[in-house]
Amino acid sequence: MNGTLQQFRARIDERKFKIGVVGLGYVGLPLAVEFAAKGFQTLGIDLDTRKIDSIRKGRNYIDDVDREDFDKVVKSGTLTAESNYISIGTCDAIFICVPTPFTPNKEPDISFIVGAAKEIAKHLRKDQLIVLRSTTFPNTTEGYVQPILEETGLKAGRDFFLAFSPERIDPGNKKFRTNNIPTVVGGVNEASTELAALVVSQSVNEVVRVSNPKVAEMEKLLENIFRSVNIALVNELAQLCDRMGGINIWEVVEAAATKPFGFMPFYPGPGIGGHCILIDPYYLEWLAKAYDFQTNFISLAAEVNENMPFYVRNMVQRELSFKPVSFKKAKILLLGIAFKKDVDDTRHSPALKVMELLLQDGAANISYNDPYVPRAHVDGKDFESVKLTPKLLRSMDCVLITTDHSSYDYESIVKNSKCIIDARNATKNVKKEREKIVLLGDGK
Image (cartoon, rainbow, N blue to C red; front, side):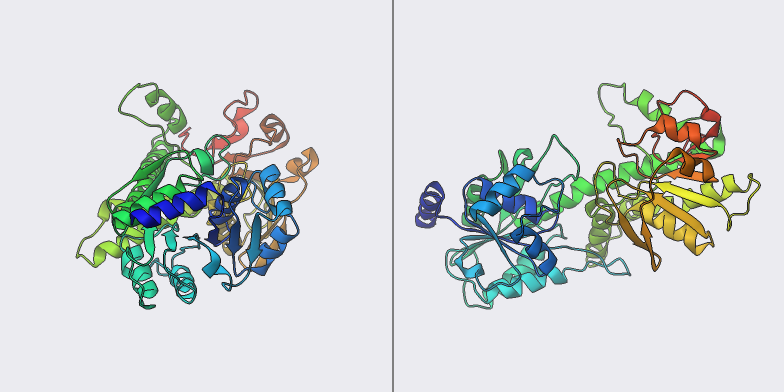
């Protein structure tokens, strides 16, 4: 191991160490650009030829990637991209950053991980480091990836090295990026952990070593399930405040947040989206069943969060019942369909689910505006973002704020709208005409 570690260090210092990144999405592309920007020859692999074409043509398709760094590494040739695995054997370290969705029955789908491992195995050689970065359930690295790679006859921890190091991407976060977020690393043996920590430290400022991949895999699930459970708590309290009347959940949370210890603020909304917070509870729930264990608390939280789009749909129907227009004929405008503010990411967006539910219930005049998402496909229909104007707002029977983008002029939105349902507390600073606003969790 000492010899391999010394070789790694020497090749890293000389910038002769080559990095491979499989999967060039929200996790893989930022990682690939980070390594390339540090002077490492980096090969990105993705089966989506559109991504490969974009990179080759110098088009950055992920906002979180620094545009200057992207342009520099593409023009210099430090970052290259392929839609096949032919050259993967030339890489000294390979990061697997492929999607890990769930099935319609909410069971884990690690087919992308398995597929990537099989392709890597065809080109695996001695002294390569393989690092799984995709969020998944404990024992994926050792129980699925390792056996596939060892079918080559090479032994993990001796002939090649294997570790799990979970991603910690927060789309739209301008403060915490790939390089300044501490990264956890757990290898199949001590040598794998040390080598993985050495390589990962070239792209991040701080590496946290753990004893094995299972700890790292479970740690990642804990991060996101922690958020899921706490968001579910405030979502449930928001519904209770609505029913009780006279209590604004947003004011309650802000007041509680003044406590300097023992409390962390979480906020309600129309549901949760993105990849990890929504999916991770179901990954752990599925795994727990193999051990005759029921994750009741975690499952209940996931259920509460997934019910929020239905609750928002009901809010729209309730408010329109007070208007001189039928639900089916009402003109409804959704503001923001990305899963969170100031990003173009619509993965599992609760806004899209709300839109789908309204369409399925017969709403025939639905439109949306999102400065980050020009087009959307919902419930079998294609939509384009409409231009947001005072005239458009005045023509709407209901304006639903589902994503609180910073670029929206909320005072103008309130001024020119007849009825606003605010699922994000985006209008909190608007002082005039608040009687038009129906706030999720307000209870008025």
